[in-house]
Amino acid sequence: MKVGLYLNSFSPKSGGAFTIEQDVIDGVARLMGETSHEFVIVPRPDLTMEGEVQAKLSIVRFTPNPKPLKPAWRRAVNHLRGRSDNMWYPASPLEERQVAEQLRGAGIEFLIAPGPVVPTVELPFAITVWDLQHRLQPFFPEVSTEGWRWEVREAHYQKLLGRASAVIAGTQAGSEEIQRFYGVPAERIFRLPHPTPSFALNSGPPRPELLQAEGIEPGYLYYPAQYWSHKNHVAIIRALVHLRAEHKLTPRVVCVGSDPGNLEYVKRLVNDARLDEQVKLLGFVSRELLSELYRHAAALVYPSFFGPENLPPLEAFAMGCPVIAARVSGSEEQLEMAADLFDPRNEIELADAIRRVLEDPAHRDDLIRRGHIRAKEFTGDDFARGLFRIADWFAPYRRCWDGVGR
Image: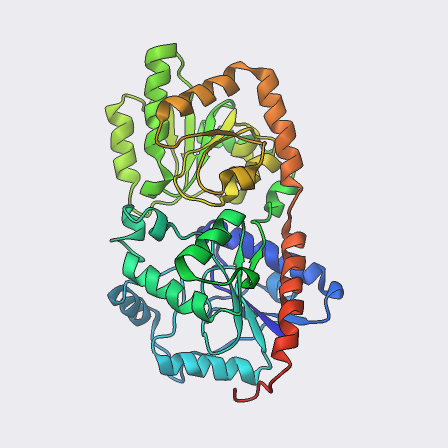
């Protein structure tokens, strides 16, 4: 069976989506000898694939329209329909049929998306669900009234999950949410956790000069996250205020990430709390600096309200950085016993967890040890083998009809 691996986010600024897709490509390419299926890359049409990517797997491209919409016009259509700019959508049902016809013509029999979108539902497909937070916490602006609005998210998942041949979820908690909200039968849901990123497992030698260039001394608390409201930077700020007032502790914090719109609010809170000397707010940083920040941090602090999975704790585990993370649906399943968990609504719990890691070296060392073990449990190769199993599962169904024109 010829399987198309659909890539939507092959850009470092896509954050975790880029990291996952890169590791999936590497794993599938490395292990192709373990499957009888032919896997090829199907990139969204506006992605320019790098030469090293093309050398790993064959690429099948589609042209959405003989006269495709200019990127600016397509963005305008997406905005009018409340769609996300981070995803490629057909502009019309006709364009979606054209995409399906082109992929069939290239021999594609099954699409697998390691992310939450496919270019057409007119071919059998498997799709990944990272979260359904618009259902669980619909009050956050970024899943309700801004960008990818609530009603459009809901229509997206209603359309795709009902049609999907298979659905990939990373945790049992995520699987149960898919069943509860969209009625997908359990036997069509496959559990493939986020793989621990390979760049963290196979990091190069330390480069302390990168920190020196930013004026950062080791021993800070670290939070790599885009400045969305659900990322809950406010919990860190309030925890710092509590530690200063009640325990005379003034740990430094380094935050990195691109700004979708909440950074100015975070800056104002930092200024109002008189924490400018303690908190350093950086923007998007290179992977090299990202890695170096893990190496020299006293701990990763991850107060995000969203789950059920997150990549930064896995990166921290791999790089020997203790993890303090929010207790959300799925977090205990993903992080196991390798992290200190706290209620993300309660800055006192967070402050207590920070104090314990800073003041108890034996506990910190134990978190590092447990983290190393957890980091190696599921990698990009394991995810690739999971995709092979999904293809094996679907092949007996797919062989029942000729794909030409259907």
